[in-house]
Image (cartoon, rainbow, N blue to C red; front, side, top):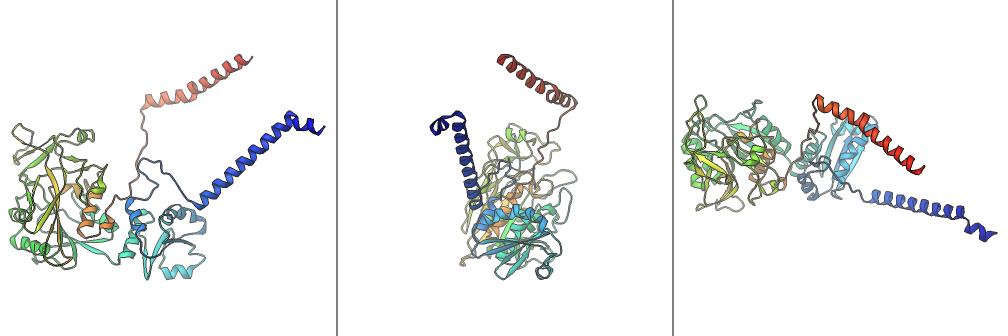
Length: 457
């Protein structure tokens, strides 16, 4: 009787089902155990929207002391902060994350200086910083401020028709100012005409597109600054003689750069690169997609940068300077020296490319750990409000400032902006989509079902 029961079909099916259920339960338990112990995720979005950037990863993994990130919000909103902060905690054992409800613990919130909920604070040793925004840039910026202590000044030269640091229009550089603030830099202006001396608190000096000639005392002040170990970024536009918006030759400043090994040519680079045409750019906007091996551009692989109305540069090493090219135009580019025509066109007499658009150099001062550094770009509009958010321009600007200020640990690709990937359809496309979803697709399912039923019958 028992033997017959064991051989019964229902008994075997019950045994099989029991085994399957036990196996499934064991797999689920093991998966949950491993998920709790090893927090691994995969970001399938095109721009890695839900992953921390290379810059953040490098900074957090290089922390030398434990750091505490505290999220301040209502207990019911803790999950909002957990989704982001757990990514920081998974990068390093030095990162500790805490969640505090300021309404339940007002004394702690008062001591931390918390005025609004939904924010985070960073405690690194004896230093305490609050994130300016609760996102990756805000939190990573607070970590940098806490770790390095204080901020560095980036000084923009004014008085010679340069881009204005506070101008919010397309030709201003207010967005560059905001980007620098996120990397723990303070931006301010200096006027070398009023006092021909670079302030001692300037970590980096920026000359952004002057339209008039520098006076010799200004040039001498910049020379003394760099040759004494200072750092400077020069962005010089081609000397176009367009009516109403002429750009001076600026021979004194060009002569200084030439003495360091970078000669700005009096030309305009035009590039008929087919990749640029696909991006909707004309020949007057050279598009760069390949870079040299310098630390500034090494992380730029896969990113394009654009430089509207650019001039070419000639480079060579000097007695006390070492110069490296950063990037060049495509072989399809040409350079014209006819800078006064109302409409500039490509001719057979133009010089053929590729042409160097940017270079970086160091100046040997003779003093230990005190080399001067400089970067020269044959264009300034690329860093203005009009163009700084074009593809990789933002990263290139910040990488240049990072290298000049010796903050090499910050050189990387910043967090990506959210992409608008909505599909826009016209009326005919909407009608076709509606017909397909409401009638054709259900009809296919019904027909397939009827055919299966008829076959079985």
